[in-house]
Length: 112
Image: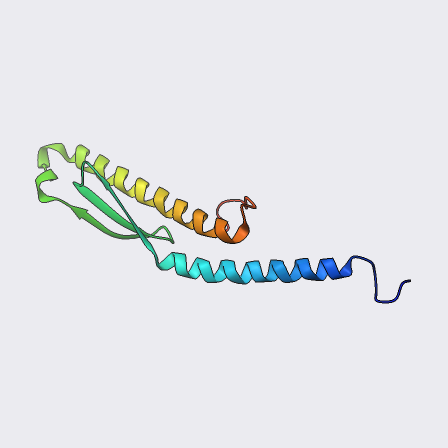
């Protein structure tokens, strides 16, 4: 066996260091992204939803003029649309930020 170990071990060690750094960076970024918020609205701003990077709803604002007891279905639809858009935006934000670290490795969703 050649002196210094197996051929290519230096490359393997470098790769392991890079993976460990990526993991550390991803964990730090995940913590930061979870604190960030996105805002989405529906009905021309009639309903506004704020969600965190953890996909938790931080707030829902409903303009009083859209509260019609005769048409609760419309209000429910507006809330649902705004919540779904806020969650989509939170996912997009997290994926975009993680992509900066992973370099587009296309890791499966839901890992973070």
